[in-house]
Length: 158
Image 1 (cartoon, one colour):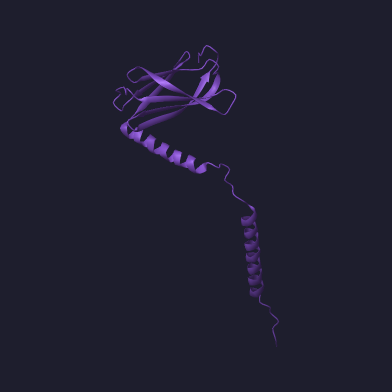
Image 2: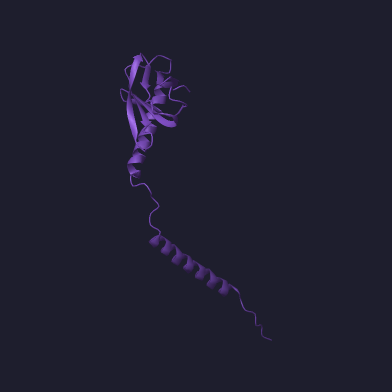
């Protein structure tokens, strides 16, 4: 008496090898025709800048700099102090504002009106919600903040 049992293992093994070969062919085609997904040609320098910004933020937090901001009419006023609340004076401050109607920005130096208090007058045509950036630097230590400025009318009241 003979048994005509066929084993399914060779068929499954053949299917598995076939699927593997198809996957290799598909992944080879994807690798050769996909191209790069990098959309920013300046990604490396932006990555370096991001890294240095993180280091600067950490340094400023270690020394305990604190920054308070307020809008008074058309003046943006910043109070910069250390971890004990003492004013930090003689720092170099700069405000970066968007230029309306474009992707460009303008830098406005901040003037120190009293120790630890810095201000900049906003342009008359700056209205609506605008992202701005403020940077302070003193003896290699830096602090910067991104702000969303909201100006409702030409008089600058918020």
